[in-house]
Image 1 (spheres, rainbow, N blue to C red):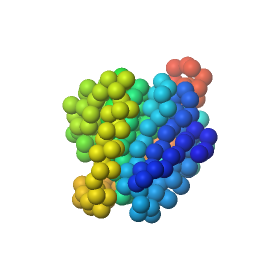
Image 2 (image 1 turned 90 degrees about the vertical axis):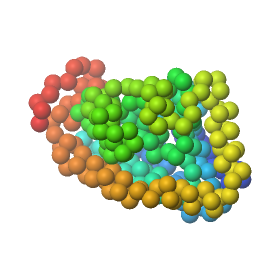
Image 3 (image 1 turned 90 degrees about the horizontal axis):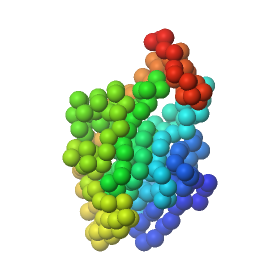
Image 4 (image 1 turned 30 degrees about the vertical axis):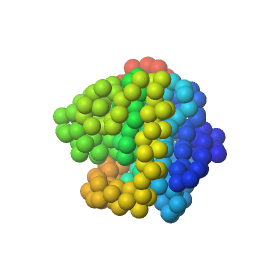
Length: 254
């Protein structure tokens, strides 16, 4: 266990719990730790399911720490998050996400990288990066493939938050349940998976993800464009600094 992330192993299952209270915000150190964890997991032939969850707080994950978006340090954070996205896409294990409360920015992107999403009816998904003159490379790459251009543009370009019912109707959530039933519902999905052949699960996931190379290429391109075109801009710094100072941003549109 590291500060903010707890791991547990049992037969054929790894459970990863975010526990950085109160909002489970990810810092660069968390992202690097998750990268290391997934690297080890990818080579583990004895584990078939990864269960991603969070301690019972106000949010599943409210995104990546705002200070890690400042232009002077953001490139390192984005490189680490890109590698994390690649690791999720390549992971042979089935990833089950148990989600509630706020799943914003990088938190929503973790959900999009999961295979089966069980969500509480109080969940709120969103990619608010554009309101800070930032961008969500994983979300912008994956969402059009999952829900179509217009719906993806609504989330990515308008920065609007959507609820669990909206996500369930568009196929982003496998099961939506009352908050009090969330853990039991996710446990039932994990238990069902563990009752199946690990070889069959891996093979079926590989076939389901046959389009992953194109998805990964789109995601990599998104990160490269962000770092090349937006990160050096005045507005990129202004958006984050204005948020930290709790003042309206002054855009130069450059």
